[in-house]
Image (cartoon, rainbow, N blue to C red; front, side, top):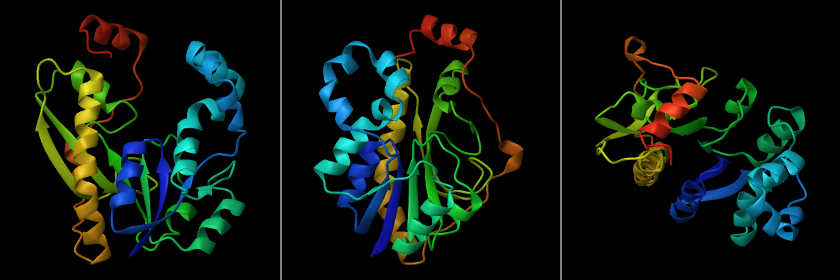
Length: 235
């Protein structure tokens, strides 16, 4: 059974891991006083921007903290995921695989090399197209008629690792940003169990990305955000 660690904010993916035939040995959670979020829950609802500015990690990672406590999942805590202390911790627990989904930090080479099978990441597009931090928004801006979900190996080059699993779906005219993200996530979750089994049994097929087809999109500009709002897609 694969020994798995999780990095990210997609609790649906983390929840799926609980039902997969893996040993979930921990999930990364930045250190913070998470009791603050519970005590000031009403403030969080009324003034999320203020609370995020004041308490940062507490506001962003509070729901993940609750999830780990609820299901008794070990929190792997460190202020620096690429620091020597955390690298030693991860080396000591000997993970076979790291799984990443919706994680905003860059994983260094030393960290990526610790698990036996490395790290895999979920990206909500048909890589190598729409690499970068805002694929969903630009897919809608470009009026694409199809998209998909990709699981790929992680390398030091962001979104450029070999593809392990990928599925496509048609984009309906009424799809909003939320619809597109939800559809990609559903496909990613559906692919995850079989992919993990293939990795464990040595059947996973890694397909290099074709750089000739690669596209990259940075974060939205104010003008692009306004355009999405006018298209009634930004929700």
